[in-house]
Length: 357
Image 1 (cartoon, rainbow, N blue to C red):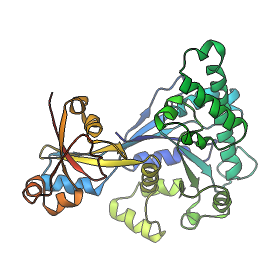
Image 2 (cartoon, one colour):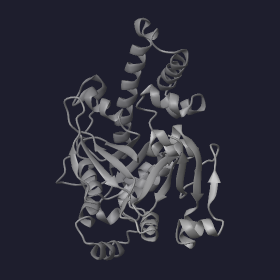
Image 3 (cartoon, one colour):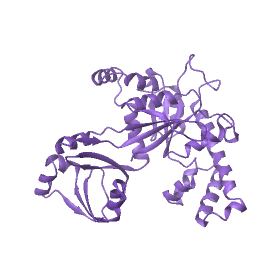
Image 4 (cartoon, rainbow, N blue to C red):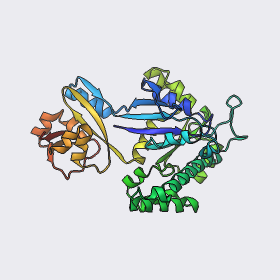
């Protein structure tokens, strides 16, 4: 299991170009995914991890399976969407399905690509999208707190919705919900504006390394921690090249990492995700879990029976597994540990679960 990113933004900001670049980067198959009557594109992309390659080599695995990330190209939103303009609430309903919202923001000039607004202004464009999400949330909150619907929800849900309503109406940071409610409660609320967010500034080729006046404008107002500068056009070009050509081209334009690499790193950090591995002669595989996940829950990502009948987890760190060239020598050299139900799985752990059926 990986995570699902919904690429959103105004029309003609480069969402589909980025989607095509990202999904083609690993020869992923993109297909229509049915949401209501409008079909956004969805692409499953394996997350290449050198650690898995090394594990598969040592274990002489017949196959290796990377964890994956889903990208959803959601149709362009326009001002007034919460009231039915453009694709209206259909657009907004698609966003509810994703783990992370990737805000695609236009930070380039072009005479060839029409702009829905008279000028390029990344802050205004982002505020349009975020305002429509908040308006949609307010409408949803009001419906759920209506007398006839209120009886169907718990007291905790009512408190969360009341708090969210107050924060939005007073133009306060909706992320403050995290101070009062658990991640699970917030996720179950279905509110759009509280979803974790990444910001992608789409620039032209000459602005990849140092940005431009538009990205500077954006960075003055928004935290750069969850912001990535990408040229969707360049990403597309890179993905048409063979491995050596790709490296040479990236060196020439002084590009250290691809947009996908940066997006994955930021996404994993934002969602507090870790990766653990299973490895043997038949298969080496990567699994995505939340940081802080206990061993039985990690076992459950493989199969529910593993979690129900969990006994112990044979555990080796990635470094020890590589240094000792596999399970046998790791065990012989005292590097394999038996961990119980309270063990918190660490990033890079190689695990073999003991369980009763």
